[in-house]
Amino acid sequence: MIEVRDLIKRYGGSRAVDGLSFEVKPGYVAGFLGPNGAGKSTTMRAILGLDRPTSGEALVNGKRYADLAHPMRQVGALLDAGAAHGGRRAYDHLRVLARSNGIDRSRAAETLEQVGLAGAANKRIGTLSLGMRQRLGVAAALLGDPGVLMFDEPVNGLDPEGIRWIRHLMRDLAAEGRTVLVSSHLMSEMALTADRVVVIGRGRLITESSMKDLSDRFRRDVLVRSADQPALARALEQARAAVVFEDDAIAVRGLTARQVGEVAARQQIPLHELTPRSASLEDAYLELTDDSVEYRTEATR
Amino acid sequence: MTDVLASEFLKLRTVRSTTYLVLSIAATLAAAVLVAYLMTSDYDRQPPEVQAAFSAADPNAVVLPFGQFVLGVLGALAVTSEYGSGMIRTALVSVPRRRVLLSAKVVVVGAVSAAIGVTATLLAYIAGEVITGDRPEPISAYGSFSDALPTLLANSASLTLMGLVGLGLGFLLRSTAGTLVTLCGLLFVAPTIALFLPPPWDGRLYSVMLPLLAPQLAGGLPNAPLSPAGAGLAMVAYLVVTLGGGLVALVRRDS
Image 1 (cartoon, each protein chain N blue to C red):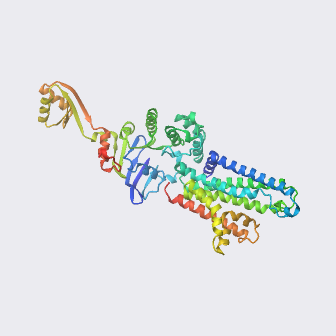
Image 2 (image 1 turned 180 degrees about the horizontal axis):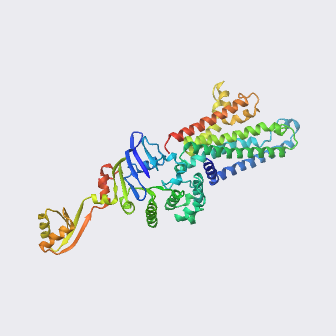
Image 3 (image 1 turned 180 degrees about the vertical axis):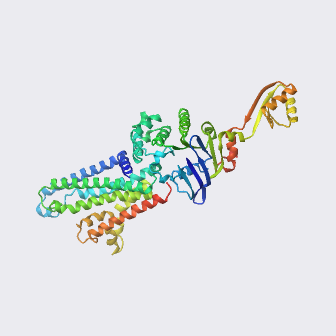
């Protein structure tokens, strides 16, 4: 269980997080979405007590992180892959962390095995690839078998096999009844992993909903192809639909696919294709965060 | 707290820099012993009036300044390597109580510095005694072990102090380069600058410079401005300022 309440974090004059509140409960994967600079990492760092909130609070299992006795047994966090001493061996890194939280040293070998790094146990962290360091960070997060897990941009640097692995891992962890919060700036990634999303922009909450509600909320149309497009378009307009020609197809708004089919049947126009479309989650996300993109390239403006 | 102590000790043991620093102290010790041996064999070939003007063949005279710097580096790296690599975030996530983390580092770095300091000082003393044998002063540094004891203790204390000063500066400055430059400045540059000040400030400031504290603590310097107790107080002041500053920086600043 993660609770963020009225969190404000100011750096100098700018507000990285500006009155953010949300909750993450056990049993599902919660996606934490926002453009670069939206305040995702700052929020996660505030939850972990690395940054002191200017005001508001962030609680894990009802307590401030710093008040947890053996925090790694309750919370596992993957912050960034570089957060380890490059000269230390992978196994020693985990042993150091396990020792600090009274976790049995056998967990170091177990988690290395679990993330597929058993063969690299005695390599120095500086010699590992970004993807392998990312896996080591996941091993560190899993070390204390915690009930709450936070991953900041976990797919960074992973190869396709690794990305698939971490998606499964996060879903499995949630299915075991753990609380899982995953940040990303890519909606497409979250669409494949998350059950719920918390979308933020410029440090503020934009929306918090289930993935399904989010995709339902965004405009839909029906794509239709038929033997006589102009005739069908006229008939649909008479049925009060909005019609837009797209190449050799018609995009219909205001009617369901079923209604479009019935209109065509009454006109005896053979249909070649009838496809209900929802705006992709990617589009939904861009629409949601459009006002809050902080660093934008000229071309997309 | 014992878990965190054990973890911090494990941290120190599992990086190569610790090994290299210990090896460099061993190398310094070996070089110091060689110098003492060469001095002694030179001494044996000289007429008595030249022999009387010799300084002591004491390996500790070489080991102390090098050891001070190396242990300062050891203390500094115990924290700046974590800031440099991002390990500090992982460390603070595993031990979010910052006072506990700093205290554990103080205990571990202090104990390791003391162990290295006592060992190096004692070995240097024993080697010096073996080399000079039953030759009289001044080539033999000490008449007996009880004569030597104040110096040996003061040197060990000074080496331990440097480990902790390095650690405190590391917490304060966070950067390895910055901390090592500051250590060099305190050990090698500041004493020289102090001597350029107008009297009486030159002597006053010079007497509280880090390299000057060990001999004053041992009471071995003739006309020393500081009494042994005064030198001890100055050492404590260095600890309070650097570690206190480091603690404030760690607790107040985001990581």
